[in-house]
Image 1 (cartoon, helix red, strand yellow):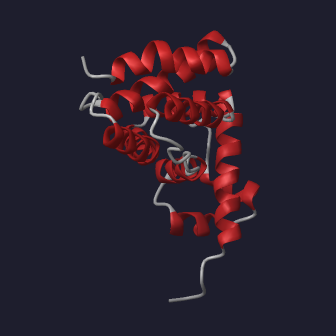
Image 2: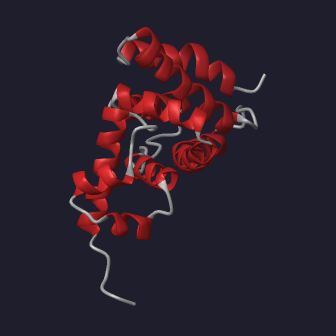
Image 3: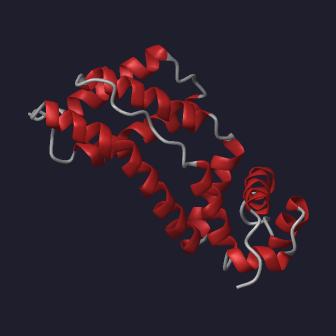
Length: 189
């Protein structure tokens, strides 16, 4: 049994992991460095996470746990505007170095890719399930694969805007994404 886990220590480990990941990248990230930066023993980290991939996935999962807004109305466009604004804020608050380190690490470490994708799928489900279920209830005009399309397209275009274009995810961009891309994709033809 032992003593209960110190939640403060757990948060310190996850924060140190994210900071180091952004600073040195996935390949250079070590459990020793995380232990040192978090003020934890390496054994404490290994008791919680079996390896570096599991630790990084847990840190990413913890960071992406923010809850999306509840659908405010039966109006699909208004709900999508609110949801995409929230998603854009979540993505743009990520450090570019962190995103780059994750993408690079996922290409070189299959276990990391699997763990991070699992964590991100949980976030996608939270983002799309309630808003689209509510929209479908109010309107039978959505495609059956709407949630999947929304979860694939919206984050991809936001990441492209932030990382590749270097542009802001401001109100005009969000309105363009909703009106010109998402609504035509989501509506049944």
